Image 1 (cartoon, rainbow, N blue to C red):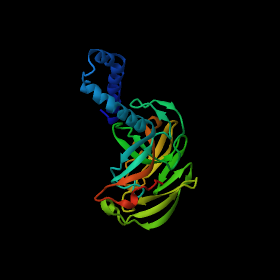
Image 2 (image 1 turned 120 degrees about the vertical axis):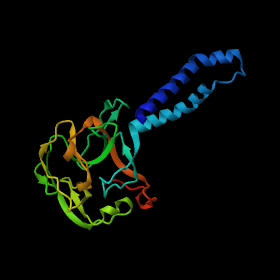
Image 3 (image 1 turned 30 degrees about the vertical axis):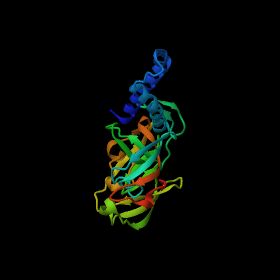
Image 4 (image 1 turned 180 degrees about the vertical axis):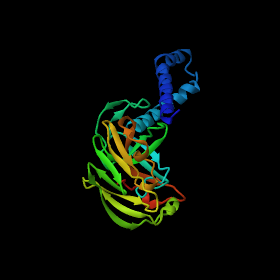
Length: 256
């Protein structure tokens, strides 16, 4: 049972108790005795219902925290980063069933998105959108081609990792640029076997995603596309980093 479902259930239960008490039980208690104590379940429900409701609304429709569990998005995101996900940007969805009730916008190439892993929706993944519906995507010799045009690459230098990223020290850090001009950094390990990919077309209602740590990412190259219904939101900020120690320089950073 997911946290979101549990939150919906406890919010509903406490809300129903508060409603029934206000409509029926409270007047009966008042008529019996002014000194009659309020049942503890009603007292707790009245106190906790607003809290549960606020958390449910914020988490379901506005913002959701997420912790980076793996190295697949180095150097953009590091193990131990706690990020904030904007759930409103791609449309308002009902909690649990994820039915979109208010379209807002659609992901763009270069967005860093959190989504339910298509092969196991109980697991959340975070990757970068490379292809949107209708795009032709090719990955050859560690270069991404979108609609037959390569994403420009510029070598920055050898990556110097710290903490959990120390084992990535020495791989090449590269600035990759989308045709729109949006840039981000990726890591390339030329000592690893390169997984070239045949040319594919992104189907309607789906997205092609990749990790920035290209040779250490389990992404669309291996398991396919992300359905739009699986999208949870756009990652936009780091509010805490806790790996081996707190890295204060990452707190408050945006996500490029």
